[in-house]
Image 1 (cartoon, rainbow, N blue to C red):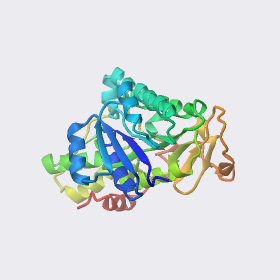
Image 2: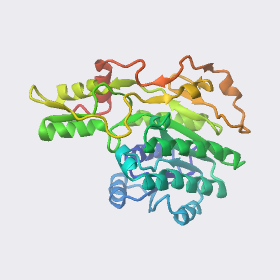
Image 3: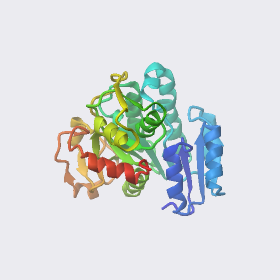
Image 4: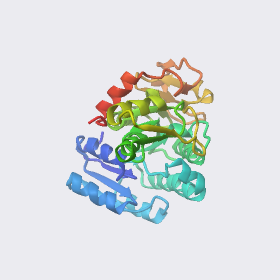
Length: 329
């Protein structure tokens, strides 16, 4: 479905965008457009890929005129990755989070409708579920805007894909822990009893394609991700990179942090189906003129909510995941 097509990746110079671009190139698109604010990140990405299929555009999704000019290039698919994601930053600068995560998403939706994009994919987060911080609130609104946009267009399919933490993405905890051990032989942990969903970046992108290719518009695809205790994650990294003198310092939760994350809430579970071993699908609450009959053949979910406190994986499983992700070298 991507062969000879033009694909836009917002926030495309980040870690998700790099991996998505790598896998998209194998599908022989006509053009991949990387749209982001990071000049140096784009330069580094251009040097790494050295591929004429990729075009780099500096710009901000907050700027509708820039977004409109971008869509005049003839976009077929939009992967919307751009966001302010750091929880404390969003807590302390809420206006900026709103401008990017809500207003910017609205700009992209409006341009997608105006120029007849085939499919718009909003990449969301577990923090959008029963949100306890401003980042989660803005992403929850972004999800609602995306799903509701299906009623504003007869040509563009709008879909959400919701996941948890991705190992190795920019700002993620694993590279930070490794850096702390190598520089100070110390690891700072907010609360070791916290649980989080984790998946490797290549796996997350592969699952992203699966959701895109099976969706018809209006669904929220939820990645079936394994979860772990933060204390176990810390210990596995210390066992590999640290020694008997490595110090674990518990500094307490940051503002807006939960002990456990949730990928499907109790409210959503009544309208959720198990699509396959990799995905659950949440159907929209609002009426959308789409045929979801293929999903009615799937089993309804058998849980009240999908929490990171459920079915926590072992340290052996975590070691294998970190090893597969290339963090234990």
